[in-house]
Length: 380
Ligand SMILES: [Zn+2]
Image (cartoon, rainbow, N blue to C red; front, side):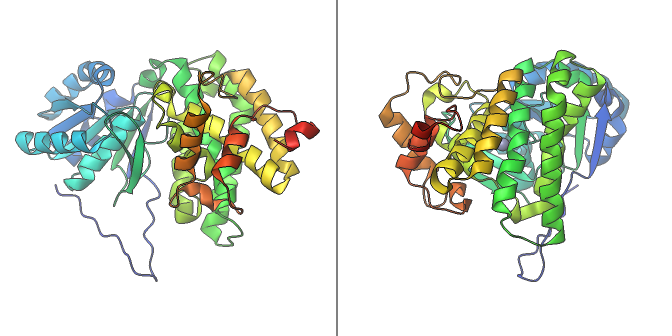
């Protein structure tokens, strides 16, 4: 079954990619997904990392028997990069795959979605952690083989089926859900800036949902993390895996990433950051963005928001500073490199309502934890 796609490009008509076609969620959701998968294809290619593939194979085996599926699997390593994309496209044609199933974290799912859309095949996403919203979105990030961010690719259609199995998510390290909380938090701080003074109904709805998402995360994350697998934990998993995608889907081009993700993208160019999760870098990036708003615009709301987040980060274990990211030995030259990349002409940092120079960005990066009322801090 070739995926039918028609994305309008006229100025009169926009095509929204709001949601996956179907979402199955619950403990043991995979074991009940056989018929839903078989409806989409009979020769799936499973794309994921080694851990995810090992985890998923025993769960999928009984479904294959019951629904007559012929599966094969392949790794997305070395990264969500152009080389993996070519290798995987060759696997698609060798296996005569008619469906792509992505299993894993953000990079595995991004690669699976990209391969599926380029081969015009339907796709299923099965996240194995709460670290990102990649299972939902019609977007893939591409990196170099060494893991430095290159660019993102908007996809013509979102996944046909998303399977959110809480049992699977619970096997992931706690740190991944904490990172997902950081990534999801960014929706409010970025969408409220990138939407500007937009009055369109869908944009307003999306930005308000981002605010609600922030409130849910601030109120429930600590309780959720204390009891993995519990009811509140499941609510926070929904909040990190599903809700950011709703906001991005509804808000479209008006709810894009701003400085927090631009800083993440810059940081990926330093090798020492490659063990730091996407959401951890983004969480730090939110503090840098707020710091910029304080420094450049003397924005007191941003100062208050930053103090509130510093407390929250301490409570749940998100990084507040370069030291927390393990970058205590980073050199000024490296920081300048990060800032230059984050301030490149096509960077989303320029969605801020003021211009940002790399030197200002470096000053913000090293001062994310200063106290609000410090006069010295205001002059950094
Ligand atoms: Zn993100």
